[in-house]
Length: 229
Image (cartoon, rainbow, N blue to C red; front, top):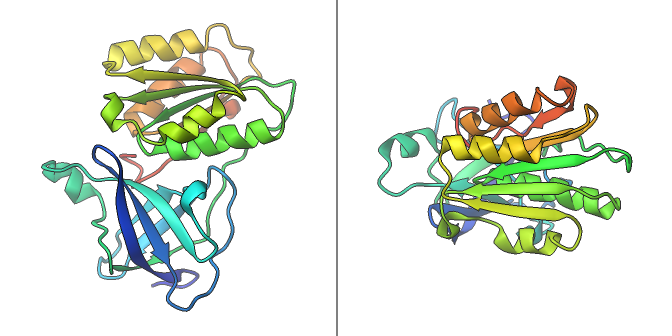
């Protein structure tokens, strides 16, 4: 069942923001885990849960050669949410796959617009950093229900000197749609759109993006089980 997966154990867990946590995973054998690019994600399978796996974003800033740090959302009191998420606690055994990195178009002639929500912010911040390291400008829009629920704020602040970073708090679905539509108006057909977050959020981004860019230029970084971020 666990072919091509590496055995890890949860060694630490700490809060990133309200309802969001970072979880550190380490190998028992002192082997170094495979390296990964900024913006990468990894599949995690719990040892004691049959056919239960989820995709999580990898956090480069807090990861070490023999550990991965993933970002997770765990809502207190939300039974539906808890049922959808894997419960990760210190000492849990799990298995991880090989990290997967999103394709990032590095072309100075191409405009890049990035949209992030929830733990998807980790992946989008990583993509923005790759663009910045290549000397390319970008525009990043981060959405959260409130400042208290905004994750990776320091990582986004560090990107402000390299591109345009906008934060949007407390917007309902209609205003999120207005903000994303405004960000893409006008956009050249060759503009690259990157998004990660809840499925409904990415669906909204894609609907607006299809009015402006080629469908192949819309990249969704899907996390969780494909239904939630």
